[in-house]
Length: 256
Image (cartoon, rainbow, N blue to C red; front, side):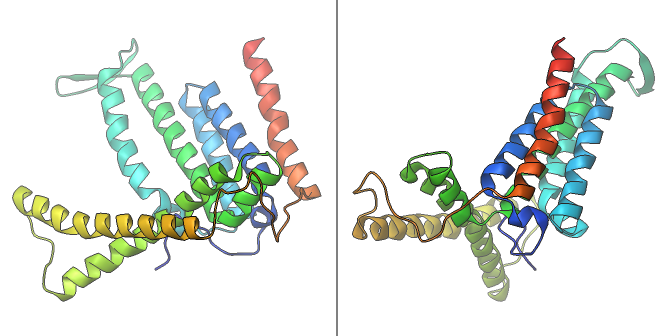
């Protein structure tokens, strides 16, 4: 089974767009979800992002669900808390001693949809952007010092690596007969037995990476050369305009 939160090599429209344009797209989506505090606009923005992933990135429905299911579970709990704690005026129905108001339900749906939309947008960016292209774009186009850009590259590479190591550790423990046990105390033991090898592996990997960078003289010069060069494409510019135009219009429409 493929890992969700990592670059997925494919031939699609979004894969061919430069990372800077996709960062602009992420910024537009983030601005739009914070412009509205009602459920229907948030749902429309999420559907637009989801269809972008399906049509323009050629990511499957199952891949997207597998990538955002943790955020969906977190969103359910967050939604319930918002419905209970946020006050309202228009009573819809009662659940025992709890009063469910229309304003509370609408606000909870909007906030939960905002979180899921932003997370889905980040997933699409990671899945369609080669980490090497991200670093090159940040340094060549946005003139960010390569030492800072490379830290993002390490994060994008280490997250799927740690996820893969977690699967290996889980499989190794199952082979040795150490399965998951029920009960709070057993779950704490399972978490300790699972977390320690993963943490030690991460520390060892960071130390090896740091030693390798130091041995190669990384950071000794203010700038560096690149084999590859990232350039803006016409379709990428049109994609950015297609999102920036409505975003700017809606911002002025809300302010005026």
